[in-house]
Length: 321
Image (cartoon, rainbow, N blue to C red; front, side, top):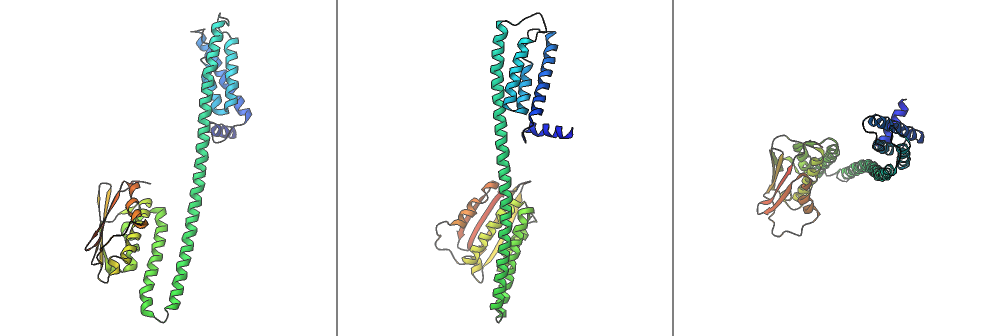
């Protein structure tokens, strides 16, 4: 009995087609119920011949599909003509109603079949998206594993090369370790989010903790927003190391953030860096900074001041993901 109920449930939801026996049995039950209802209505209105069979056609087609629906409509029409629960007999008017009944049944069956087709296509697309998402996660995990291995290899090679230069190694080693910690943090972010301060320290740590200051209350970032901000912080930090504050011995960075309702504002302010005389055409990094927060109803403003780069990032903090 439980197996039969499960088969009926899957067939009704469109997850799997029911067996022919179940479809026919259900259609027969629908026709019997419709005939019983017609008999009850005939006690008040004997001229109701086909109306009770419309629901029977609908439910039979919804479970068994197009063919079962057509057969149910044909049998319902025959029962409406042959069975008489009063003194009236079949006449031209009843046959006209029969034609109208079959026309409405045809539209009903087409609508049900169209819905079933759309539902099946939706399930197929959902299944494909789930498979692609699982493949993407597997691919990302594999890439993260390979990146970690390559970083470990680079660390080992540099340690061998700089074995006789302990002062240089003392400057390189913490930066490599900080980069490895950032990669581990990003991999965890994608699953559970992280605190914005931990994210910034992970990105800015390789440049020295005395080179930057962080101002703001503790804020836990949801996974998607954390990943997006990690990419933006990495781009800004990389540019600061190449052209900005971190490329100058005296350069400093101050990052502050404030929260108003569900809006987050982050200010990236570089000082004592090289002056920017000419700004090149926007590259991939600039385009990333400009568009990354659009999905969070946010925007990014970048200004190249004489004191250094000044960037303001504003976005909405999702309540749940």
